[in-house]
Length: 359
Image (tube, rainbow, N blue to C red; front, side):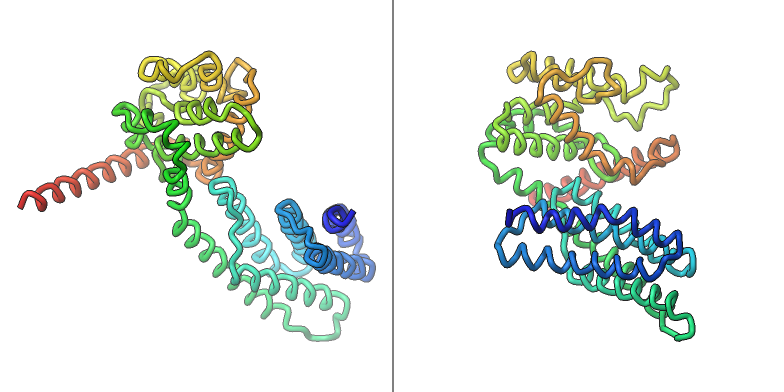
């Protein structure tokens, strides 16, 4: 019961969000403030109980964060109607939430920064002042000043989150290469000349196909180990699921819908995998590669490992949602040109190093 009570309090906080919105729409400010005070008290209480009983958990931390965000968003929606300045706080908080979701799906790490905690404190102080201003119209409160300060802290925290993400971007790759069992399992593929060419294929945004499949493979491998699945098949299929012929951004030929990259590259990857790595292939791995683009594939994944690969690949490709313009030919050309320049620069650096070594 002690393990359940803190999470039940957090879930209660989520369930009252629709009621908060209803009271705000109906302009029932006093019941709304009382309900918000109750929710704030449960936020304090669930954390205190979890720490006192030593039943803190990752699930509880995530639920707590979601509960705070949902409450803040619902209260901000109500305040935007009466004070348009709150709209900027709402939009900035949406950007921060989306970026944190993006980082979590890319790294599986929830970043907690001091400036983020200060920003959250300012948001709730500003929301409180906003509602007090609605209740006591005759009292002049510094609401607008707090809105501006909150927006500044939101911008600062967003910049800090972006900086922290880029600073730690290589951490996951380092952990992958330090896992001796994983490296021993996939080393022949990683070092194969044909597979190394995928370093030159851009993926969705600012990343090569090689980097993408390495991350998907390692995530699948860890899930397989944890849940006693066929982790070897998951690691291998994860590496080879995008082993297609050429960068999709460079294909500007007009084709029927079902012949476009998203519908055909899984089968290309399976065929290429059989060609270059027959010793790693079997019926299960071939099926996993072929069906990883479900529901774009006609075939439904038939192994539980197939579903893991499909879901992990989708989660790892979340960056595509943040760069939808990549679908346009203009941005695709820019992606190819940028990747070509990076390749030329890398080659130039290698040549200079060899020349210096010779000297």
